[in-house]
Image (tube, helix red, strand yellow):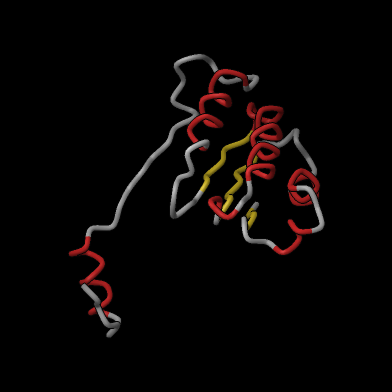
Length: 118
């Protein structure tokens, strides 16, 4: 399933409602992608992580963000320690951070004929 963190439905609906609509059967093994994770407000992020804690045994999740907020790691730590079905010291909950170098960014921009501003 795919959830967009900038989804307009988040104005009127709780994230948990959207997740329950998109992933109604929690008995199946599922893969969830949350794109634009950084766009979620603090309330929605907490709601997401509470929802994940209840379904951690059967769910693989990829959170995609272009920036990291100060409380994001705290939420990840809580998930690591409180989620049912995830053993302590497990690699099932990980944070992977990467950056595009200026050189790579310049290469890609030149490839697509886009101006590079230094």
